[in-house]
Length: 200
Length: 221
Image 1 (tube, each protein chain N blue to C red):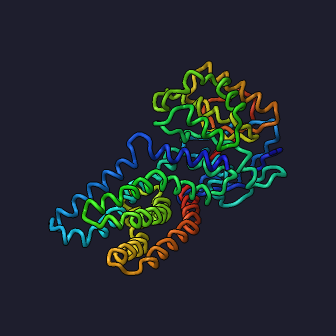
Image 2: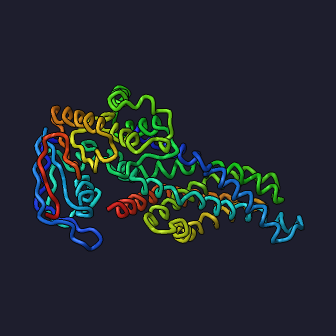
């Protein structure tokens, strides 16, 4: 269980360019953070750095008392604009695989299908889904396998007004059960959140 | 275990999926095996002498075909990011992907290899040994090929780069397998060739995933 996410004095360099330096963030269980910044400021890189995919130039990332490798292996979800869904496979095949891969159960997968209203889409190939439907399928992983830390990259952008509100409710529930959310956004999050601007 | 099983099923399904990777590899194999005698001349005696060698080289080339997509498709659409975020060590993940590649294309090619060799004029008694060499060699091709596929991640025209990286690694199995088949055809002891081929395949299975995992981490970071 991740009780806290702490970034201290974090610097990340990508392709020879220093994206940001001296970044600090402390997020307790039940808190969300809205990450803002202009295009290319490094929001996606910061999320991938927290996930351990990008190496840091300096600074530390700590997941409360949890071991960093264990926290990354079983404690966080990363949902980006590259959603890892294969166009030629059906929504059901993709959701089942990702649910099993991230440690979900049949019951939690069923709950994800119900919560994001995917039941009518399950037999469609991913390529037939609209951008919003596809995003809902990607977001279903969050519920299919409960993990405390959600790293979301522009989670709301393809969603319509109704689904933005509904996903806001999903996030609120997650926070209420002790979860943590870091979301890169351009529009405000529909939930109370700390603000962190990169490259300000 | 359930995770690795799910990944293996996905890999095989993706390889067999639309676009028919194994069918393309088989078609390429059949095409190459048909072209070779057109270039060397149709005299049965000459063909029979080189039939196993041709079938074996064509097999190595066909194994190259579908390698390009092994890591690239997951790298391009972000799935590799999510696959890495798992309690399954990346080395095991890479090994499972190569195993899936072998099941989806290596094994069908191995079944086709004796047919191609006999069609070219090889003695039918060679069939079991060709099948054995193709199965074991296919494992070596998949696990060394995976190294090339992982190293060329993110490169433009990654498929060509993969071929350039991988072909030198295909040299030993081609030599060992070819030697075993040649020895058998001429009534000489052939066990050494097959043993060396198996040893090479075992080394590839053991060491290949380490290199692939390092290359994947490097490509993602």
